[in-house]
Structure formats: C-alpha cells, structure tokens
Image (tube, rainbow, N blue to C red; front, side, top):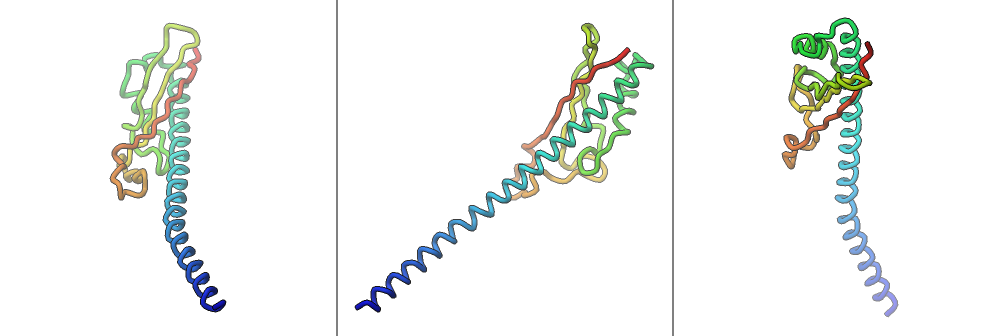
Length: 151
C-alpha cells in the first residue's frame, strides 16, 4: 500500500513541476524582453538629450557672433548637420527648434530631438526591436533641452 501512495505522490509532484515550469518560462522570457526594451529606450532617451544639448550649445555659440541665426533656417540646418550620434542621430529632420526666448532675461533657445526609426543614412534601427506587434510606428522618443544664450 505504501508503494502505491509514494508513486502517486511522485506523479503529482512531477506534473505540478511541469505545469509550473510551463507557466514560469514564458513569463520570465517576457520579463527579460521588456527589461531589455526599457533599457534600450533609456539609452535612446539619453542619446536624444545629448544631441539636443550639442545642438543648443552650437546654436548659442553661433548666436554670439551671428544674431540672424534666429531667422536663418539654412544656418540652423548647417549646425544640425554637424551633429551625428551613431544609431541615434542620422538626419537633420530629427532636430526641431522648439522656441526662442529673446524678450526676457535670460535669453534662451529650446531644441527638441526625436528618435525616428528608419530615418537617415544609414537608417536608424527599429524601436522596439521586436516587431511582432508592429508597434514601431507608435513610438517616438523625444527630448527637449532649453539652453541659455549669452551675448
């Protein structure tokens, strides 16, 4: 009688183990994938901040000697074309001057950068990487930086 009970217990323990592994493995994989994509989003966000800071600094430097930079889109695009970050910024279309504050002190310029998958040469990598849900077109990572202009 003891032998039959032990076999039944071992069989139920084995089936419980299989069921729990079958549930836990997909959950663990999904958790790891979400963590990786969130980490990549953070890195992209920091890259966009860095690009916006570089653009603001360059515009502020140019503003010291050339006040017409405010109304000269060609000069602005020339500055943007010098700012490239591998797998982050590949195109001038990722930059936008979000505003100029020239009436109050301190005078400032605001630049926004946006990660646009497929933009530039070579094209930026897709985000999120896993395109199984086709969410790539819904995601845009942007950062805005406000920078002081000096006279």
